[in-house]
Length: 322
Ligand code: PEP
Ligand code: MG
Image 1: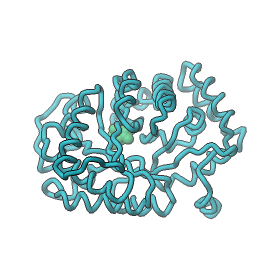
Image 2: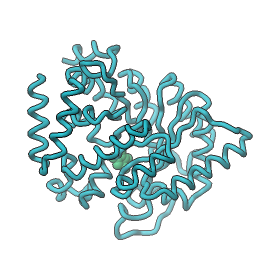
Image 3: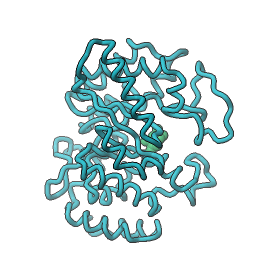
């Protein structure tokens, strides 16, 4: 089985009829970057920089961050590397960054909301990403977006930092956002007009869409990534991004779930970002799917009102191709 998968390493990530779907890797540090290279990921779709910030007793220096991001970009040899701005918060505290206690940390100061409170840390990270973009394409991805204003604020900071370096252009730097709140889904058209790419974080999107804590074991019946409200939101985002020809992807857990693959393929998603060790398994299934059949499947799935019905339909679709 494993041997058979390895024969797919040099095969393109595409459907049976040649429609490409990038199979990207989620990474958290140097070890994962090695795996992304080993499994020939088509790019890095989510670099979670939180781990880099947890390694040290104070926030990592410009030199250290530049080194790590540059290593990722050089390792991927010209393929996209999407690096997320620090996404920490009350639930994921940093020892050197004391936070006020919050009743509802997931609805509190996290992600970009927190970074705005420490603008020096945000600026250093932006500087490091600008430096890394000298070595290849870098996507700077903003977490926890619910409106346009924080996107514009980050863009203004990027402009200031470019100016400080005396750069007029940063042609290898793209600016994008995580789509992980229902507000971002509703605003997707306007968001797409001011960003270069979007990536759906299905873990948080599911939690916020269904009002069910992603980490609470009593919520397993309610936290359901195949809930029609979640899948319809994903469909809306990917279809709008496709219309505006903006790079779009999915980087939550659901991106690596084979059962969801035909749905994502049929939507015309550009890339799915997952654990590097899942890439070949996904590629095998992807290469057995016919794009037009997946497109028709999507129209069916979007009419099914329950997650049970949706899962059954997806199981049947995959079984017919086995
Ligand atoms: C997500 O929310 O789906 C995501 C990819 O980000 P994280 O799991 O790091 O919150
Ligand atoms: Mg998230």
